[in-house]
Amino acid sequence: MPILDGELLQAFAAFAETRNFTKAAARVGLSQPALFERVRRLSDDVGAALYERDGRDIHLTKTGARVAAFAREQLERSQSFLDDLRGEARRESVVLAAGEGTYLFLLGPLLERFARDEGAESLHLLTRGAPSAAAAVLEGAAHLAVGVLDLVPDGLVTRDLLRTPLCVAMAQTHPLASRRTVRLSDLARERLILTPSGQSHRDFVGRAFSGSGHEVRAPLEADGWPLMLHFAALGLGVAIVNGICVLPPGVVSRPVPELGGVTYRVMWRRDAALPPVADRLRERILALAKSETPHGPPDRKPTRSGTARPAKR
Image (cartoon, rainbow, N blue to C red; front, side):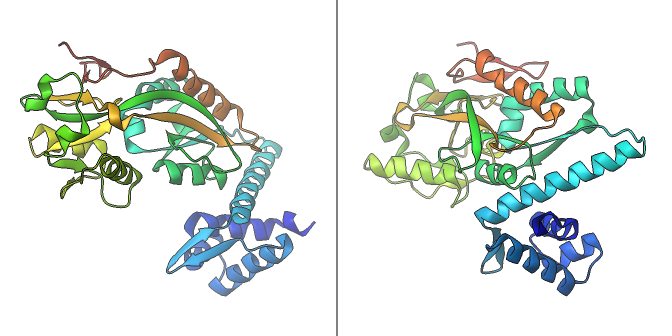
């Protein structure tokens, strides 16, 4: 069975991680032409293209993602088997992919407890937006992913964790801060703080405004919830954020019913055999669905212990 050729799998695993033939070749100790040839041979054995080019960017095909996941699993199993034969202890580890906001405002305390119980070296974190996090799971670069993803790729299993409203965050001295909810028509006159163009959050807000007959004026761009909230605290504008965000001092948030809410999900590969440590982390993450309220409070302030509590009104 040629697909089980370890040298071809090792070459493709390196290529799938780097998306660069030169870097992948250096990683496995081959020349660039030799590594290219091994990837080509594996593609021939599979009978399908494993990657495609988009300008200078390289993307794995659906088949390529499946082969990458298979290659990584086989290499991990081989290494574990060799360690066992040699009598060498091997600590299991789990790779989790999630976005910055998910780590900061949803998973932080859970990961702290998990690292304390399992050992910090057992936990590896990739910072990825939800689509990239899902791709990392499909390709075997991560065991689990958490994020907001409406269209789930084939091959992934998902479970809902919590749903949270989309809110507008602003300085507590802002005139809209006196309201319990805010309408899109109220925000049409405000300078919005949004993620950079091309990101899903920005596109969603733009469609919502367009559907309501309003336009988004030239926004203030900020990449990530913390910077968006910081700009709001400075009074530079109002930020559209997820309701789970912990607000800095001097900032309040109010739901925007017309924007609805978003659902955080945990994802794993349908055909993956998760190592026990990954399964334990998955169970802890799934427990959030039972412990979190469906709609987080619109004003969440950091306490001295670093957890979040509803702000006093």
